Length: 178
Image 1: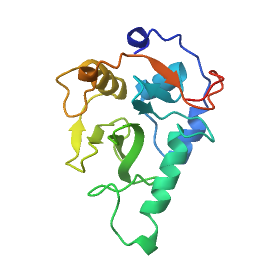
Image 2: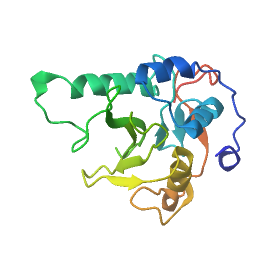
Image 3: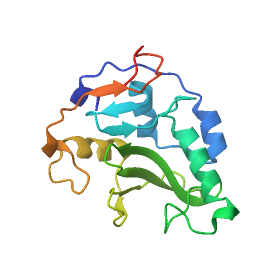
Image 4: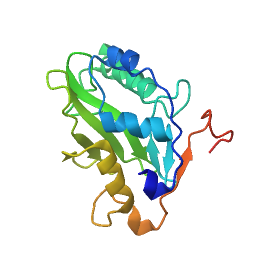
């Protein structure tokens, strides 16, 4: 991803132990490497990569907390917005969102606390269609979204948007908003 985007790695320091302690599972190693190199932000002006940017819109942990709160709100009934899956709750099995697109496609890991280290990517397109499962790393999925014209329905290379990266608004390294 670094070569593809011609990005200079940021070397962000993150307390992964605290984050993984809250989740109750380790996060994918390649995701942590991606975040430490890029931070949260946008690939190709359309693919949003959630990182660990406390207080800004590109923070996956804040997004997860909100999604879990809504998913577990008994006033809303037992239907999950991620149906037929639930949002991951510590010790259980469910989804944690790590990315999306401007077209409302959503990218999640399916996390099972009983199978740490196994993080298939689940994605669904904006049309409310079926979930698609990909047994590949976060970085491979992201790479294929950006460059593989045959990676449908999620590939975006046919739109000729390039492969650049822009840090998210409020990112400590960019000094500008999106």
